[in-house]
Image (cartoon, rainbow, N blue to C red; front, top):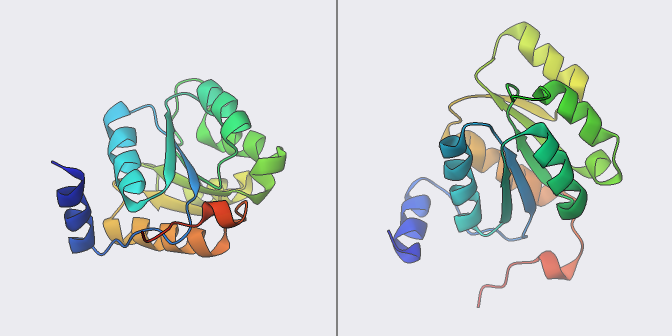
Length: 154
């Protein structure tokens, strides 16, 4: 599928081109799910990095300084709750919007996410309308680096 067709498909699902470019980190040990989410976010106009373990995510985030993180809870090395706590201790992590994206969606899981410092707990599979809402919210609330983070309509 070429980029124009992909963009038309995203418009069909209610996605609009990003007005502000965000740095987005997707962390999921399921490679296909990470790639699918990352592809959608990239096609909207954001800069995306994918990682599959907590150690990789911490290393990448230190250099990438994401505005937004979509973080799986069930990672193979350090669980997402602990990884979120570790991210929140960094300068970039204090400002980032961090969303738990997980198959664990009981009341106790949602409370654990809140206590770990997640901004929102989202059950897998994430619905397109939820992703649209999170990205729109993020564009309006993330602290970006200024004019260079604005998407040109040219």
